[in-house]
Image 1 (cartoon, rainbow, N blue to C red):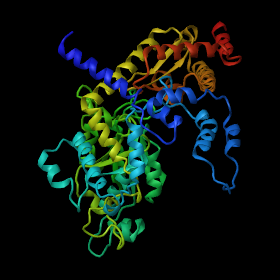
Image 2 (cartoon, rainbow, N blue to C red):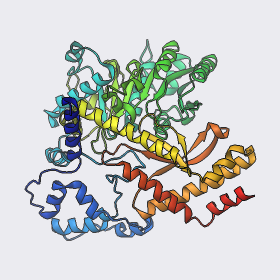
Image 3 (cartoon, helix red, strand yellow):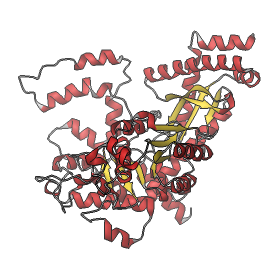
Image 4 (cartoon, rainbow, N blue to C red):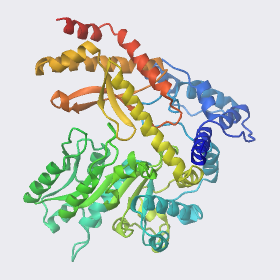
Length: 544
């Protein structure tokens, strides 16, 4: 075995260990905490049961509105939580839980989280986070460098500047997207002459002053719903978020994007922002960011990239090119609690220009004083925990090559799953994986043959029945509790852009094996046979 292969194998083994085993610390909480600390994965496997209770049944365990009059021993309460809460929680760390963007966590996260909670630093102000403030600024610098790759002098100048910020930590991608568009709005409608700017005078006065008939945010049909939340909160209205159609690969159609920009300009509606998606929630595809940056430049609007899911791909030298053009974005959202394997919620928004945040700066006499390095002066959220510490630790313990291995393996796993779906005569791959997401559905071979030759009306009828069968399988799989995939409804080009219901999987969990994936398909085949309505109807249609 070559030296490089030995190194790669050792790194892989090391990464696997940190997601499964940690040393047991001394603990006054006794065996429960010791079990969690020693082997978190084992603890979850032992205590989370495949509960078939409906949500309404579980609600009965948490229905009493009275605050207890008598205190409980911690150990007694821990057992209560084990029985009522932990046992019926969703086992997101399970290698067979591949339906959402959550994963097993590295074992070192648990003791570090206890340290973070114990220190209880409030990142809104230096007075309550003396060391955490510069640490968070460094982590923002590290993430900024990951995206924009500026020279060392740039970070020496701006990383710890009181008047500037390279970005902000947020509870997640939603707040990160809101913050990015908040900056874009305030920068566009800033103070000018006798006008005090939108932050003081409001949207109506701002539009009157600048002479715009309205503002618009343009994003693909696959854009995240948080953008409509952002438009709502920022006073633009949800209708200002305009969805641009996507191509057969679920990427924004740049021709249509440029056309819409031109149409809006003719109506005197200013494009506030163009939003590129780097890792769509439903299919994991990446928009043509370079081309979008050209259009944003032409129409002089803010270019934001929502890379909440796919941003971590930049850690992989092999796959970084998938996000080409992201370095031209005015702002970027990345969620560290997704493919960087830290707990909920750790999102970041990054700004190419460190001076951008001046347009949302806030101060108060008792806190966030003018000229201070308080992080809260440039963030939407006030009081915040020190989640940056967990990202800082992960970047050091896992390292960039370690993250690259995790990213590469996840994409390879998705490609493997796509291959076995394609090879299975009773499954249909709907979207090819670009990152580590894909969609597919169960379609018996005979029904696939009929679909290929059916007219539009019969095709629509078959897809309706297949949708019902997909829902049946997905619900039964979730209820049985051995594995989990999610489902969504997307347009499929081969069916005249008809929307069809499909299984959606996310293969980021390092503990998920190829055998897990084969077992999931086998389970879905068995569940399909249990359908008393939809599968027989489909097979009857074939015979007819």
